[in-house]
Length: 126
Image (cartoon, rainbow, N blue to C red; front, top):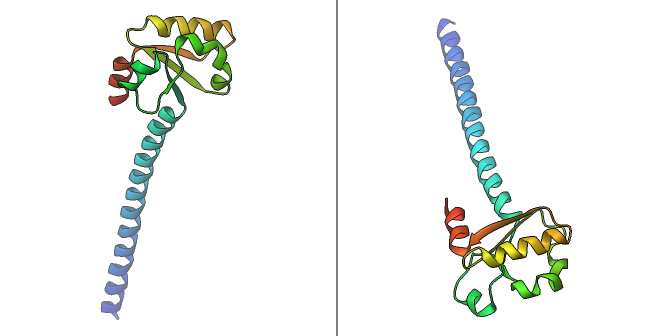
């Protein structure tokens, strides 16, 4: 009878221990997934716009960016509507600064001047 009691107690302790370990691992996995989703969501919610010429854009840009040259910004305002975060950039930050002003004059408030496309790439890699 005592042996049955000991075996039952050991089984109970093992079951409880595995449940605690499972729960802790589940919490760690959940935290890791949440952190990854947050980072992804931030990238996915940002609309990256290269305002350089198509020839400059073809030579390299930010992954996922679209090309709307500075002289076409006012004609392409519909592409900016509904975007949560907008980052404009160019070769040095000058044209993107002008693009930011144009967009703000047209009612957009969620614009950031990313500077050069190399600056934006460097920030994304962090």
